[in-house]
Length: 301
Image 1: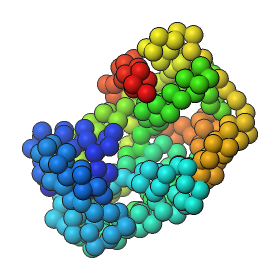
Image 2 (image 1 turned 30 degrees about the horizontal axis):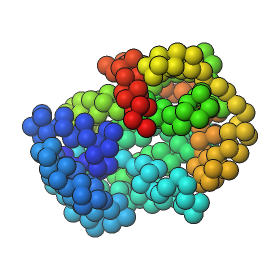
Image 3 (image 1 turned 90 degrees about the vertical axis):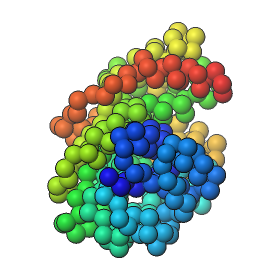
């Protein structure tokens, strides 16, 4: 098949492109950075250099594709410490650009990377942007089939705790404890997306993606062992304390408040209600596998 991927060569994009190329598909990877072209071509894919803000570029790149993979990230909207970025509005604008480009190009099969929590119109914090884009894409004509992929929290999000482990000797969040919650490896996400691309498309479908389930206290135990800190603890602080700390550090208020609300929803179990109603078969990459990767990044930082 002729497949176009947005998202450049990130945590998901790179293994996804590699897997699709290995399976014999013709793959085009969209990136906004010219310097990425050689890396994309080294994988055996074609590079399309342009921005998500350019509908004509997107339409031209999508044209003739059997499947288009759409994703949007907070990073694409701006830096977390830039106070002037409206992340929600920017990503909604990208969603509208995708919708217009799909219509103009005539593409009929779409895979969209969404997220757990996208079923919620309120109470999901920063994840509201996934809810918004899902609804924008649902406005496409009925003859456009869409597979909405909803992964849970990425293992790689745990890298953000390296700073507090080094400065405070603990993982510090506004949720924690012994209740298990699902986590996912980007490699398992790439594997599921590849699988879905090679299966028939019909209508609008949703698939959750997860790799393993562990409690925050278990995560602290595994990561602590991996980095040589067997006494590592996961500390829970009040929402206000964590928010004040992030704002004092200069974090964009929309991002800071959005993450606090999202994690409060995780703490209360609300975020995962639809996930547990539609629980997937877990992927191959377990927390013990990720702990080794975490240790490597921790020791290099």
